[in-house]
Image (tube, rainbow, N blue to C red; front, top):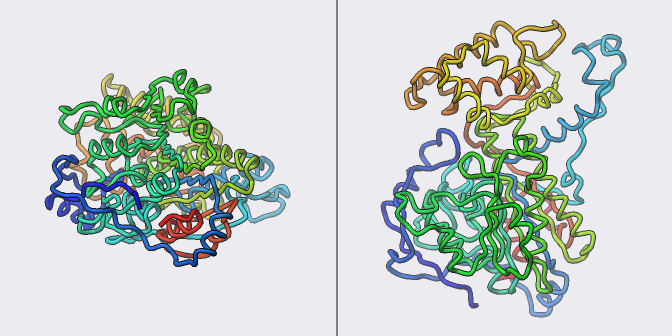
Length: 541
């Protein structure tokens, strides 16, 4: 086998810190404890990547399997997306379409409901795939794992600690990924797309091997050295290293033969003739990730556009593998922003549709998988304050993500000394929540809710750091802006949904499959089997 080798000498300090990450839950987004960075030149020796054991087969059987193998494989990962996320999006669409039902007042009386009957959810495209399974997500140290370890399981078939990417729990044995194997063994082209940073945990799990997911610069170096033909979406994180003293990763990429684009016009001009490309979204938002879907302006590229361009760049007679991550589903769930969660889940479905349309022209050659790496936020459809009723259509009143509200509004409130009453005018305009109105208006705030908002606003306007929060304040706000997160909490609750955490949970994830080889993905299994099933289908060792 001619698979390339990678550096495996991981500093013992990095390993110790990564193991420590398994004993404490992160405060907001899934960031284990920081660890010392290590460049490839610092490693002492090379060891071959450890490979997952492929199912045994006789040569004739292997030839038959090869003849049936998919030629084009799409793997869509909704980061933080389990059953609650896509079901909430589905129910939301159903609520919007079912105006008769949602206009009726809550009651157990047929007469009071004016005979309205719930039509039900509108299923997302991937929910209609012929095959559906479920995957367990635990890792080597937690039933509520992080993205680094769960993506490692999907990409390599191995468990590891939270915070580690494609190395074993000792940090001494690297694992070769499905994408690397297809690239080296089958000469397939490979594309990696994410709505968050391209060197974030989930995309990194298909090309990088690090004891810490926080080694962003080293992960970026591995991206450059991967030779994969297509990277697109969010920008690179820590592009000149943690101390800003290293050569830009974008310059390294250009030196390695990549065409790097930073504008939509340049991205549109890219073709397969460019061979190796990195497309950075022109409209980067929080943490140099793509905009939340609800913040994206008309005409700006969405995740689906990067999938379409990826097909154009990767399409060839040998085959290609494309991993596309809806990463901001996870970020929205960490922040308990149900509106942004729903719209980014719908954006992922739009991206899946591009693959579905491609498969119509390559019906016997294409496999499409849609799954999650873990669940984030403990999202529930149902809230104590709305009893057995839900009003998911109320989420449509939200027109801005929590992140953009923070950046464009709340920061200015503190700077300008804005009053609570004036801030609430923006809240009504952007989220639909009202200080006064008709008694039957579900979005009119109660005295209790107004007091919650006022308390949160006062804290947000103070100099109190989240590091100094009391236990009660952390439960209420996590490490997010108190006012922003309280606004989304109240809109969530009035819509009949709620969150239980600012971190991850241990729910299983769905695995939807369609096309060539889809049947093997039915059942209830460990997430490592996603890799094993893919590897068996495409015939890599």
